[in-house]
Image (tube, rainbow, N blue to C red; front, top):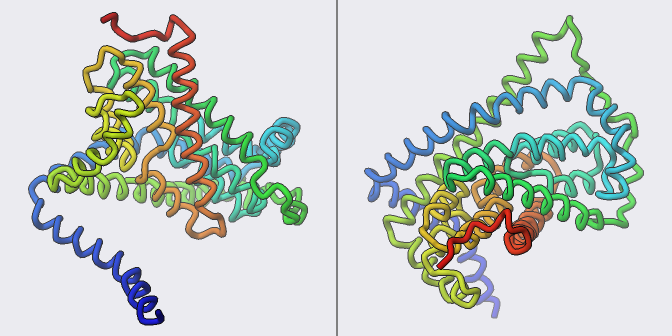
Length: 351
């Protein structure tokens, strides 16, 4: 029995090294297509992610050196505490997470924890529902570019935000009875290094440096997962996984053609959405509902970005994972309700 346990432990230790060795081999075997995928990832990062996220990163870093978050917390505490069981300062993470997109909400939650603005439990609640896809991406990229319809983009944005707020309300009970809530200093959200004209240059410099580190981190994940998807596609591993979930799709009366796009979206959001949105289907509501699900989940690529952002804190990734699964389900459910109950949102073609 002991020998058996020993072999199991050894196998667990070898799993990650074996996966990394296999990944390295695949990089060499599929080098031509991997190069194209890496370039595509870099172009996506440079043209879409940097312009849309970098200014927000710098702005939030600068705002953390002012009393804005403190006074915003005082104003919104009467709403945040009863609804989400989070002090008012958490509203900053919620607002910026909705406006700017992944992974801003997680970054602010991690900063709050490092600066002792909120307790560990409150930051984990924030982590579960404030890390969302931004309106520029949902309306612009998904609605207008991928679906060719801005109304679909607005529908996806509305259901995305509703699902996020629903998850936030449910997570108000996360570690509800924890006694650590009372240990935090109520004045801790005031900045220790408040921005003034005398230190303006230094604060701006450090804010830009921190923002560059974060944006480079995101770029690395985008390129890496573009290559991973390319390897999975060329090795037919993506088709094998898709074939495994096709019976589930048939049970749910979803055409099997959506399986590959769904798996791609679970791994990396943008590529999966691009596949889902371009599948020709008279009942386009199926495309929209699956796209809504993927937007809510965010993808494993974003999950690892968040994990990296919170790695230097004591926050657990568990509430984020649970929150994103719930967010995906609620997003799809709310989208289904809107499509079925509002004629204005009925995009299906008559057969």
